[in-house]
Length: 315
Ligand code: F7E
Image (cartoon, rainbow, N blue to C red; front, side):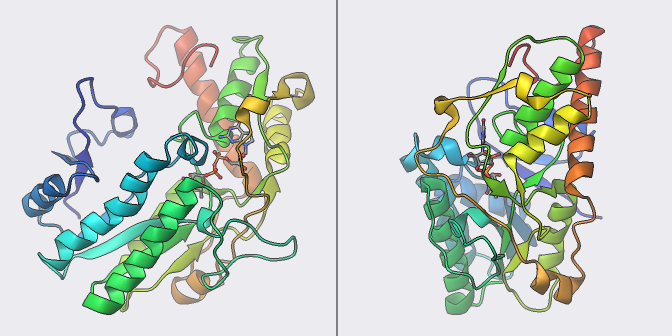
């Protein structure tokens, strides 16, 4: 029942909208040009759409790339949040805002812990530092100006629409190519021991909407509560095609980050108690869904049919 507008960054090449096309959503969403670093464009977009709710999901969201582009990352992921909040502060203060915060703001933990809303925050990348700025800015605007602004502290949330640069989709895309005999290349990975809390994105995204429907604005951890290593991910993904992951992967220094967070596992107790949050899809089911989708895409490719733009041969 919503009328949805989405912002797009205008560039000289065609805009990347393959996910909307794949989901049959193109044409159902009102696309408005805007850039998070250009506050004038945000004023224009917000006055055109006149939204009741804003979901700020825009970001330079690749942690690895944030080490190469710290300024851009900070301008978009930190100051971009401030820009949106300032437009609301001096405009329509009844607009509710969801801020896509991130488990990266914690920067790590001891083995036995799981992280909740109050756990200490020690960001370990330019991405994480920027997201922590956004996190505190949201809380401050909530208190100072009474704006209904919330932080969803989401742990990793993956789906068939993940970009290929992220570890989950990088693995499932490679597994699909191996399954169909389309590559002889080894999959080059970085830190296999990193432990992450892998949830299913569609279920996590539902919680974003739910947070804005609460009586009072607040911050919530959204996580499965269970950690798995990258090694477990790659092992199970290859087992689905009856192959041994060790024959198809190698560890490469180029995929290592200057700093990597060893373990991030969330405690979603508050969201569970307040609005019945549950992850619904297990780690193994998530990998099955993703491998199946990539095999389907590559099969279509073999048949000469269309496939999403980011499925690149030999990638
Ligand atoms: O890395 C390790 C890597 O890039 C996961 C974003 O959505 O979730 C995501 O951030 C782990 C890290 O995601 C490779 O070092 C090993 O420990 O898939 P990722 P991320 O950094 O966890 C959080 C919640 C966000 O907020 C972010 O926006 O896997 N890893 N080998 C690798 N990672 C990548 N990308 N590529 C590798 O070859």
